[in-house]
Structures are given as C-alpha cells and as structure tokens.
Image 1 (tube, rainbow, N blue to C red):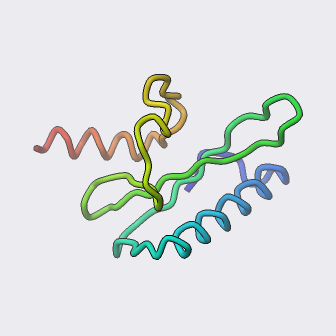
Image 2 (image 1 turned 30 degrees about the vertical axis):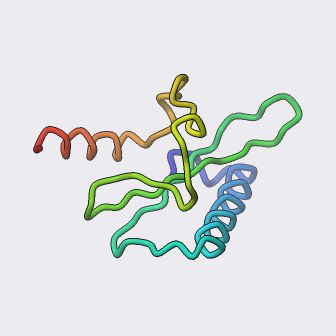
Length: 102
C-alpha cells in the first residue's frame, strides 16, 4: 500500500526499490511474517540533491499492530517529531477503532 502516486516514474522506481529492500531486510533477518500482513511504503520528499526515498512499516491485521522487520526504537522512528503523513490514514483509522474496542 502507498499513498504516493505510482504512475509518476520517479515514485514508481523509488517504491519498487523500497519494496525490494524491504524484502531483503525481511529475508536477511529471518523474519517470519504473520499470516495476514500489509506492507505500507511512504515516499519522503526530495531533500536538495537527494532523490526521493521511502520508509516502510508492516501492519499485522490479525494482531492489530504495526511493526518493522528489524529491531527499531522510538528514537529510530523520530518519536519526538512525528510526521503525520508517515502512517496511512486507513491504518490510523483501524488502530483507533481497535483501541476504542479495548
């Protein structure tokens, strides 16, 4: 999943590369994916001469959690300066629904 326009050739190439890197990361870490999982790729804007780059997270639909395929700290995630565009609206909506049902 992505909120980015994959019809844009630069976006498409960046998303394909991010997908490839995510698959490699999962394989290299011998990470067992849950049965029902969604990969979300988010493009970050170009920064001066740097091409666009992408971040990812995985959503475990059965356990209603988001996670990464490598050990990740809140500092890695920029917890003190969260970008509201980092998470898909659909996943945030699902998360708020799950939290309200607890």
